[in-house]
Image 1 (cartoon, rainbow, N blue to C red):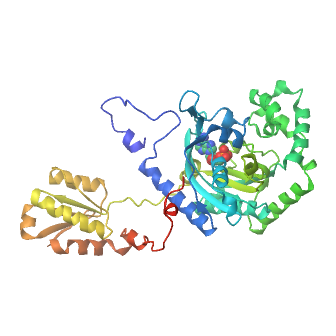
Image 2: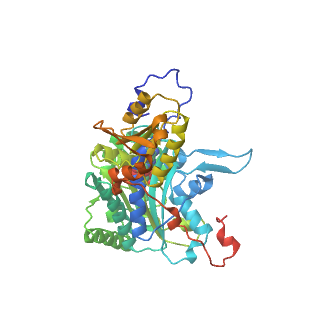
Image 3: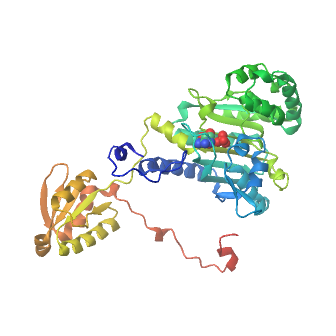
Length: 464
Ligand code: AMP
């Protein structure tokens, strides 16, 4: 709840509240959400991405297989349910990549010119322990490029994320952490060595890492617990075991980042918490908070399409956390443009005045003026008090006398100066005073064209 609202004493105890870890997005924060979406859509369009949305829930098996059985997301954080006894198990989506890869395969997108570039802005769900920057419903935007193995793709996705951070004014706070976790072949040798190194040291490992030692020893490298971190620092280094192809790929990604002047920190401990990655992995950190609250992350997933039933298809992606970006914008004192301001208030007294007020409101809005009117039965004093609270620039005031004389009072709310003008001139006068720049005009009919081509009916339907 916003400070403004919470300071008001509530009459009764609130009966229903949002569940732990989930939040309303109040209008103040929507201003941030809107500007982030706008920036993402703009950068995505520039780079040839097209938007996709996958369902909020899908087969649980998709996420178990896609994200990985032993990962925190699947093991501890998946919200799952079955429709009926013995019915299929579903889960709320915890991340975007698995669903998009499923969609790529299901809709035969391998028939399209490759690589296919897709982006999304969606809510996700994880049964995480709620804390600062960690919620049970949160929003991510993300990019996926499917169908191209070249290191240029990795660099392009990283650059895109960086440009979005720069547009939103937070790039300077963030450092790019990058690593390679190789291909399954060189990683297998490495995980064997890691297992050998950690076996016998279980006493000093946290409970999670003891379990990970069996399932995914790579994850021991990025554990946040202090004892595990000390051990991880002396663990075998992947750089000594990486195969020539993976090494070359990594080197090229770094060189391409140099070419587009993006700074990075090579971080051999970075492995990411999802199983599908191969080769490049990266995250954007605020150095003061480290991995705990990374703003976003991604990497290559060259084997996921095949693992989910498609043909072998290389791919790379990124997901950014919108709530955390908003926090960083607020910490940096960046204000999101608030386009919800009201310009003018129409106050009226008497039924005849109400009729004219409604007509005026309609005309003002058609001209692009944000206009509000009190259509209830409040006194003129209360109506003008309301106009003050909405911080409008002008009020138009109309009583029975004014209606009879076809006049209206135009009041400058900051100076209190009033003038009486003909009703017929009111809209024109207000528009002139506000200036063309503050008008909010949108004419969808300019964008919506009639399709005159002959097309089969099924092409006009939303796909099923
Ligand atoms: P991941 O792919 O899990 O690293 O998530 C990508 C980004 O999404 C993270 O860097 C965060 O910014 C954001 N994120 C992940 N989990 C949460 C959460 N539980 N609450 C809020 N944001 C999250």
